Image (cartoon, rainbow, N blue to C red; front, top):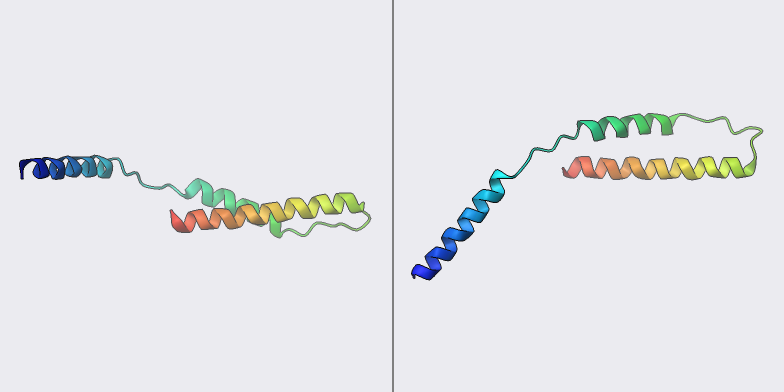
Length: 79
């Protein structure tokens, strides 16, 4: 019985230590960066008269930015 109680006491100490180490999540910087990127993505770029390669590079960058916005939104929702 003494051995089991010692294990329970040790587990409680570990849990208390872990609980004391919990930190609040500050999502402000991520939210601000996500909002700024989203605003940039929503702007319409004039692609008239641009090369196909430059249009494709723009679309690739825009898709990557949209992916980053979505990932940030997931992190913010789960934090």
